[in-house]
Length: 318
View 1 (cartoon, rainbow, N blue to C red):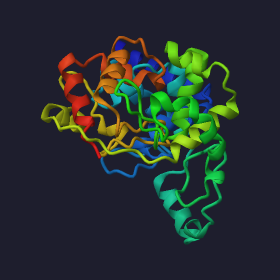
View 2 (tube, one colour):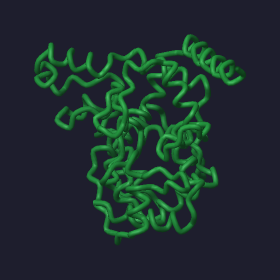
View 3 (cartoon, helix red, strand yellow):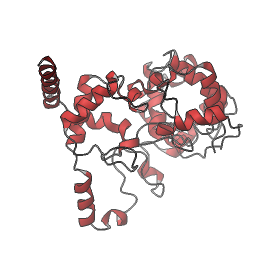
């Protein structure tokens, strides 16, 4: 009887949370989910479930179970670890309100090929990563030409074209404009701490930040030139289930190009020194501007040997 009462209380709390949820807030929080579950809640991969149209109470329960460990999954555990009850309710409200996979397929079929024939310049407002064929002025919030002029001050550390000549500094070429703009804003606000960058960004306006992000985003990334590493390869593609370490491929992709829509950065072309420093910083929480603490929850489980191996492997990505 006690178990039944407890189950009822859990169910009622989930329903109450769902009723108080904010679907619009959930939509913003769901950006990080889109890499696996799709931007419309319909996954492009058969190994990940569709969330669109799912019952909100069910979504909340699964997220709570992933967080508590009642349901185990190496990928979802770190994703859910830092979610509050309000976050879970908001996400559930967003996904439950989306048309199901069948409904989306039916709607797509009824509109024929109109989506394919739409002009590529019809960029989505606020989304700087649309189609590569779209003119840069229509894709990016910033001005590429203006960003080129402003990037002169960045060249000493990051290279004139965004490919850094120094292993201690990151390459910025080809990085998502959204991600770059966020990092600059975080350096300015103090959400990401670095004494050199703090001084560099102090006087930057939002326009400056967008211009710089646009310029570096359209530069070509140098392919990795490092040697591969077997242990790093295993961690990158398979994670470590015993430690609860999620595979890097889930967020950064097979070639390390990242998931632009979800805010996961490209890591191709970065030096081993820089990669090791960032992983160590996430591990000791001296860097803490990752969405939902995803990187901190993964890095804290990595040994020095793990960090050395995976960083070495990433330098071999082309």
